[in-house]
Amino acid sequence: MNKLERRILWGVILGVIIYAAIGLLTDARSLAAELLDFPLRTFAGALGLTLVNYALRFLKWHYYLRRLGHRVEWLHSLNVFLAGLVMSVTPGKVGEVLKSLLLRDSRGIPAAQTAPIVIAERLTDLLGLFVIAGVGIISFDFGRPVFVASLIVVAASILFLQQPRLVTGLLDLWQRFPVVGSMRPKLDEAYASMRRLLTLPVLAWTTLLSVLAWSMEALAFYWILVTLGASETTLYLAFFIYAITTILGAVSFLPGGLGVTEGSMIGVLLLSGVFAAQSTAAAATYLIRFATLWFGVLVGFVALIVFRSTHVQSVNSPEPEVE
Image (cartoon, rainbow, N blue to C red):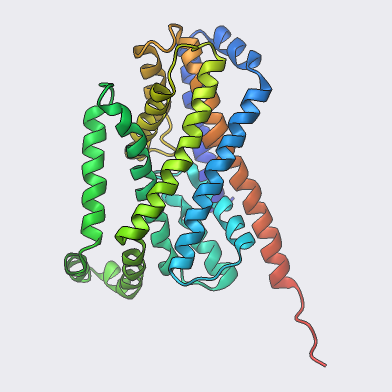
C-alpha cells in the first residue's frame, strides 16, 4: 500500500477502536437496538443534507481556484474536491492537500499555488462554525474557554497572514535553515496565493458559504435527535452542540477529530438533558458521524478511484493523428 492508503487505513483503525470503546463503556445492547431501529429514510435524509454541505463547500473550492486564475472545468474540479474528502481522517484535514497534488498531476498546476486553498478552507470552515456556535455560546456554558481561545488563534492567524512584512521577515528567518531555505521560492509562491484568498471581500463571501454548509450538517443532527426521541430539543441547541463539538474535534488536530468530537458530543447531550440514556446519546453521535465524517471518506474514496481511472486513461490514450 502507498502512503495515502496507509494514512486512511490508520484513520479507519483508530475510528473502529474508539467506537468499540464507546460501545463497551455504554449499554452495547441498547446502543445496537437504537441503531438498528433507526429509520433508513431519516438517515438517507441526513446523507442528503451532508451532500448539500459538500456542494456548498465545492462552490468555495471552485471559487478559490478561479480567484487564483485557474480555469479548471467544473466537473474535473468537482472530482478533485470530492477525492480530497478521503483525507478527512488526517490531523486537521491537512491531508486534503491531496487536491493540490491531483491538480498538479492532471492539469500541471504547481501545488504551491493551490495548497494555500486547503488552509483557507480550514480557516473559513472554523469561522463558519464559530458563527453557528457563537449564537449559543452566550446561553450555554459548555466549551466556552476553548471557543474563545480557538477564535482568538484563528483571528490572529488571519491577521498575521495579511501582514506581508511580518510573513516575509519570518520566511527570511526560516531561510537560514538548509531544508526550509531551499523551499523559499515555493513558500513565496504559496504566500502570494494566500494573500489573494484572505482579502476581506473574499473572506466574507467564503465564510458565508461555510456557515450555510455547516448548517446543513447541524440540521441533519437536529433531525437525528428528534427521530431518537428528543422532541423537546430546539434547533438552537442542536446547532450549538454540533458546532461546538466539531470545533473541539478540529482544534484537537486528531485525525477527523476522532474521540474528542464523539466524547464531547455524548457528554454535552447528557449534560444538557437532551437524552437521559447514555446509549441514546451514543447512537445519535454514531449516526451523525456516520452521515458526515465516514460518508465523506467513502465518497472521497470512490471519487479518488474515478480520478485515477480517468487520469490514467487520459495519459495512456494516443494523441489524434494530424492529417
